[in-house]
Image 1 (cartoon, rainbow, N blue to C red):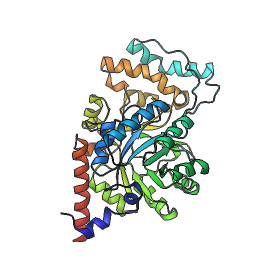
Image 2 (image 1 turned 135 degrees about the horizontal axis):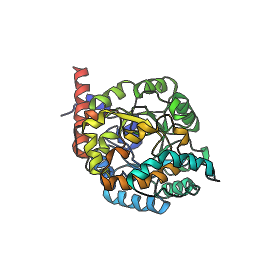
Image 3 (image 1 turned 60 degrees about the vertical axis):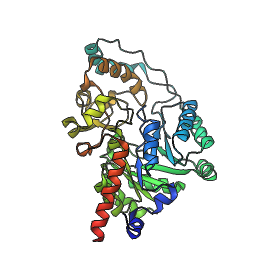
Image 4 (image 1 turned 30 degrees about the horizontal axis):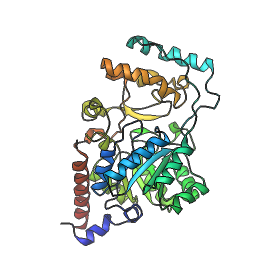
Length: 369
């Protein structure tokens, strides 16, 4: 039984109070169809904060997901969007740029015996329409990446009682977020799997480790911090809290559970020797992200200037992904994963949550003793 004094040490803090949750443990919101209502509800019902990555969804799809989430849990949950959802100009890409990319990637299409796609059309942002759904449906928490929100928009969230959480990969980004009046800031270290949500400097120049970043931000920023990257168990949560974070966000460990929408082979690889090797690459989406090291990521290294801008590169690579899955050529697929993957143990989200809480409690009990 956890004593009241111990409970006050790490359960009850700014994060749990603001978010309305029992434990300061957040499940990373996965985009690209990797989130599920089941995973979000499982984490939220276990006392943490489940998160749903919705940046690829239409406004109507977000509305439907929120409806399902409200039916699956009466606890707080988080919906995540990307402020900057494309890197290409409204005019699209030039024929010359497209031809450079075609020459670089043609061998992979030939190997899979599939046609090279036509030049993708310009991408039209849908962020404002997506945000309106969040304002209308009023989830307890709205987190966002790749930028800041305007003062007017933040005020609209405040009026509705929605907690806003921005993501920073550098101290400068954290300061920029605090200056806008955001409620909480995620300190996203370079160990994390998935995209690097940098927005002030290139992602390649924004590679501070999680625990260094937490301390840098804590020293200069008053807004509560959520540590993310390289955390998968109670050791990581306890360390994050000890360094000044109010909560910890865990991605890869939850992605590896049966409740996520990751492919079975993806989940299997996160528990295999392949998880020891990860790479930051733009090859698959056009934005820098960390996944399990693949042949394509290695071969494209140093040639990122020939990759299409996000999300046009994602569109280009979708046919490679589909064919590679059908042909079981796993080294041609991006499987997201962070550097902490080799320590993963749990395949069920509820068991993972329970283990994290027990382990964190154990570390604080040891300190108390």
